[in-house]
Length: 238
Length: 238
Picture 1: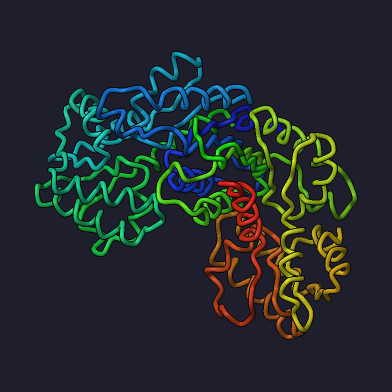
Picture 2: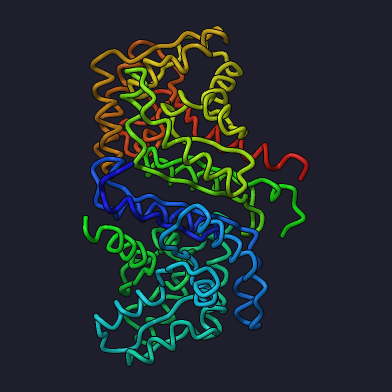
């Protein structure tokens, strides 16, 4: 249907975790794709299943309760021809290697893209890490950062409590209130000289426009990096 | 995976026409769904194929060039279990009856939902209609409005020219400039006493936040009505 090599790709988005984050991610992918007309854009299929059981509880408890639903979604994306798959949920990345092995699908890894960008920047001090308790406890980011010799500043209990509320508020559509909670978590990391700070939960970028005091610290949004990785992948050879 | 009847549904979105409008529509569906946590949301699959040939040219010329790509997408949504399908593109609704017949899928019809809402409101004067030349020429809205005994005010050539530019600008991500062009098309309809005005192209709602003089006339956004129709459909019996 198209002679353009970018259209040999079908980008699969394994989403719904949560739905607002998935919608924002797809909008971002569209916005960041160099395009002047519809036909310049990428072919995308989104599987958004919000019934996937809680990823955070699973990561904290080491359970694999969310896995069957995630596998089901990845297989549906494979059924309809996805050539690459991305997951716009950090905590769910705990299951990415197993999904790749069980489906044979090529996954682009948001955590990997982020650590690569951090390594490129070589920050002088510690990198702040804001994510769900599941993402923090699983060590998803810490292992790669250690390898890249990057110090990580994790939220303390009070900051994590603000962050948990911020994430829940985004899931409820309360993005303004979420911005206030996110600010408190950010400020706690800034006090400990973390810079930049990684928004390692895909709900958090939705609250950033509502930060009461933006600009106190540089933010890294891994969903930007994942979108750009997709675009690079699909535009090679075009 | 869920005992909730809403999760017996898988909402298929036949999109990519254009991509930004599809992303905005999915975000709107999420925002309008009554939910306090991920698991309250609907299961959604989006097939976003921006390579579908130009719908406007086809509607104007009476060609069915876009149809094979649209059918392909609808069949992929059927393959993965879609129980209802929606198309967040007005012009593409020209092909909806044929898609429904060829796939056996249940489609929710955005044009139908909009005319029903207009009939409910019984505006005193004419209803303004802003859409692509394809949507206008095809008579998609006019036939239903006639049946519901609603007068339609169509854009004149100058207004349509502003509208064409507005739609192209949204597809290029230039939403602010699009807002200015949309304002000129709107003002032309307001001068002719049209009220309300239907934004019968899914790119137009993306320009509304950038109208230089908002509030001059009541706007009807059919993507709101389509999202609400989906939610009603899936939440019946829950």
